[in-house]
Length: 210
Image 1 (spheres, rainbow, N blue to C red):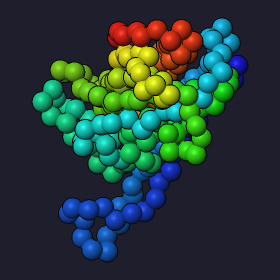
Image 2 (tube, helix red, strand yellow; image 1 turned 180 degrees about the vertical axis):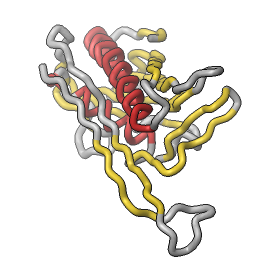
Image 3 (spheres, rainbow, N blue to C red; image 1 turned 30 degrees about the vertical axis):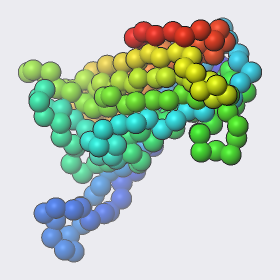
């Protein structure tokens, strides 16, 4: 099995909205995280095509801004940095890439691709933010997804489960926070993929939390 981990980080000069005066430029750092993931050969191989939907998300999370919660009642964003795409689109792309690892499905696609899919993984992005606990010097990244696996031919729900991962950043600097996002996403994929494979193979409805 291959173990893939790539983090793309680049900077570009871009005018920021708000208080930046006309003609002034500021460096905007764009992060495109990818996850560390290796599919296990012991996992089932399912001769079905899986479509992974872009997750539904709140208006705050459905954005390319990097969310941070400095205290429980406040959700803000990091200044001077953005994701390369909206958070739901990043999560979808990361999961499609991970689920294609090891060819455990016939194919892994987007619902918008012109490919007939047997199964559809519908997702809700509940949390995708860096959270500071009381008196903490660095945040803990929290990623939470609710997944529903649907048989597209019958529109019946095969399984439904909540997946949550938390990973503390090594430092409070944004590059280390982004690394924590990568680890948390990898943990989500590692827990979700075998569950999808088992549910698709057995066809039984299963619910729970992981």
